[in-house]
View 1: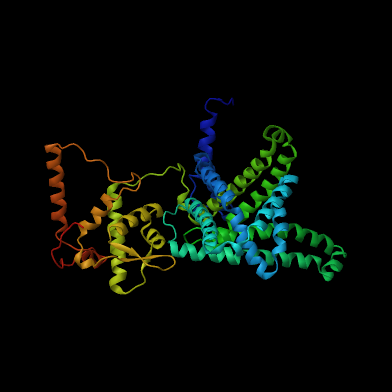
View 2 (view 1 turned 45 degrees about the vertical axis):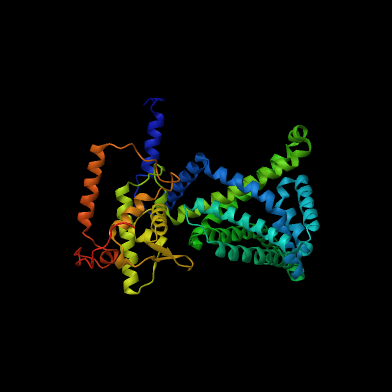
Length: 462
């Protein structure tokens, strides 16, 4: 049977949709469920790359890294010097720059020279403060990029950001260099050398020596994916993203090594800037790999974000208003019953709503004082004002007046008596339907839908 080339793409797309999107994972074997899930994540990652936002995030991180790399290493060098392991900083940099060949050695040497010249002890309080601020700014930029990959709109508070970032900056290098040093010490131990001379133990030790660096990279990526995003990340999902990112990191190293070998033409064109350009390309590719791994971890933990179309639809006003009332009802119930307060993620799971929409509605309710966030980790939601004194109309007005995408309220329209009169009638009908009920009344509604009598007549607005 002849194949019509004009309709072949349609047949291929239909077959792909039937294989990937029109399959119920719960009704297929485990291996096929895993394959379908992997294909869906791959398609979602491809769409993210085509959208260009991940590329922009990676490019912005390159710029921030160039500004903050020396201060970051200077602080890490000072901490490592206190533990007597500062001499391992240069070998680690050389290992990271290994795919760049001789240019990597040159870049690592220059960075070490800058770090040696940056004497933290003689900077003074103002200089040290600026140094720490530069490093914290880098960490803040990294968090925002990872939050974007995780579809998280709520960032850490300043106090929590400062404490969390400094703990990683001060303790992280010690743990990294301790693990690297332990690995090197074990390989150089006399017992290990004698065992390596015995076959097949020698081949086994060579295999371990090849796998251990990859496992260290995976462990580091897993820690980054769990800690950096301002959301609870399951270790299993972070590990899946780290395994993918670690594999891509190894492939990236081989690809860059081959690229640098053939980069003599770039040196002829860019002269002394060739090394800087190659270093920036290496930083960009490395950040892009990290962000792709974060997206894989996100889609693994939240498969509901992977859809066939992939487009983001802004929910209608009626949906957002109903979601606001549901959130206030759940928060009020737990408050009056003395139960643990809700978090945004638990609310999204309970209401089966997109986390982005829940965060948007919560931002409106917090902005208008109906709810407030606690200092817990993660932040929980509690009433921001007495629910018994707040009318239901306040919740609806809060959502209607919140315009996150427009950057403010829309311009006032020209008056038109007919339309304005109709809108006034609709508002009056809404007020009559509410009947002076408060948020406390909403919180005490039982599961059968029976309404308790209104406690008091209150003003509906803010």
